[in-house]
Amino acid sequence: MDAFLVSQLAFLVAVGIAGFAGSAVLGRLFAKHPERLRVALWWLLAIILALSCAWVGGGWPFPPRESQNWIGYVLLFAALLRSIPFPTTQLISALASVTFGLVVTLLPVAQNGWNLLTFASWFFAGLFSFLMVRLVLHKEFETASVRAPVLLAVPLLVTAALSFFAGSAMLAELAVAGAVAVVAVYLAVSSSALGRGFVEITLIFHFLLLLNCSVYADLPPGVAWLQWIVPAAVVLIGQALHRQKMMTRRWRHIATMAVLVVAECGVGAIFYWVARPALPF
Amino acid sequence: METDIKSSNNHENPMKKSIIIAVFLGCLVAHSTIAAETFQVDPNHSFVLFKVSHLGAGYVYGRFTGGVSGTISTDPAAPDKSAVALEVKTDTLDTGLAQRDKDIKSPDFLNAKQFPLITFKSTSVQKVSDQQYAVTGDLTFHGVTKPVAVQANITGEGKGPKGEMRTGAEVHFVVKRSEYDVKYGLPALGNDVQMTVAVEGVRK
Image (cartoon, rainbow over all chains, first blue to last red; front, side, top):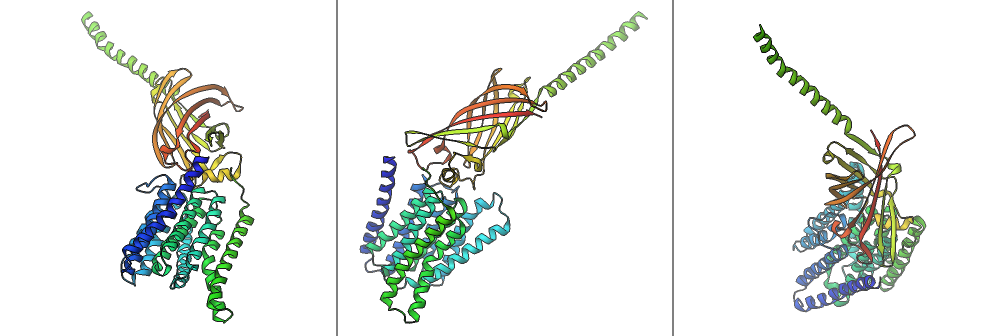
């Protein structure tokens, strides 16, 4: 058991070091080319997360056989599309990446007895949910702020706990690795250099984790959906309060992070109430 | 006249021989048809049990409850023509702890929603003795198909309450889960999964 735990911890430390050191090196290399730096950082994050999937899953099968084997490929695909330097391709790349992710995640279970209506419901509900959250969070990441990594990393950590108790320690481990990678990159490079592509890759990763966990493990789909929309809902509430002059921008940011933590605890409580999980070992 | 009779006898003999041979062959075919038997696996009296090392300290035991089905065709006259086809529903896994069952059925291990069946289809059956058969076949588990060779022991024969003939067989073998791309938790959770498959077949 000790060897197992040590190897898991070593993996998370390696992810953190790779994120931090990689971002620092890229930051120096492309110090005078901010746009190139952004693209390089998107690729760095996509590669770290894809390698994490391969390590946790015990290999890099090609062609992928299981839905979670596709996560790495979808992230690299998203990084590739985001690297194309045309502003109009942003939404198209998001649509293409998430469509690809949805199809490869849902298809294996659909082949085992889902009818077309069930597949279509999951597909369009997933696509709509992703695009709504992406729209809200993209705007939030236009300026540099510490709340950016918080909005991405805290939900990933809570998703890790949900996945673990829903029956998939592997997806839980991936979610923790994602949170570590996001924080490490932010610590090494100021957030304004990261841009929206960074958010998109992290969101696709988080989205696919939740989707896999609700389809293939036992995370209730309603809880997964709540967990997915929490960061966007918190941001929208903060914006509404700000518009009504109820608090300053600074206090709004602090309140956003505090409410996020409370809301995530709320999702955890709902999950506990719905699933009544127990320790498997 | 004698010559005619002789020639007539000579002419009849091959025909008689042909008829006798045909009847004999027919009897043989009929006999072998009767001798070939097909057994339907009884899910209520068939078991797939497993144990796997847990943290190097002990074992986790489990079974697939009521999820075994299939057919076994035997031909005592030609044992090599016998065939075995079995299916196990992965969703019927039971280790006695619901949360652990969830864990094993998840994408970490069995991925039961993507791979709802474990199947075995024999490719060759050799009679070793009256009570033992060497069975080789393709085991498909977790979407990966690999050949396995097992020794099947006949456990007995008996009549059921409706007069139906029942035969039992038992097999023990080891599956290395990493060979079937089930690698999560290695080596804390063992690589060798020790399997026992015990089936009771009802003659059709």
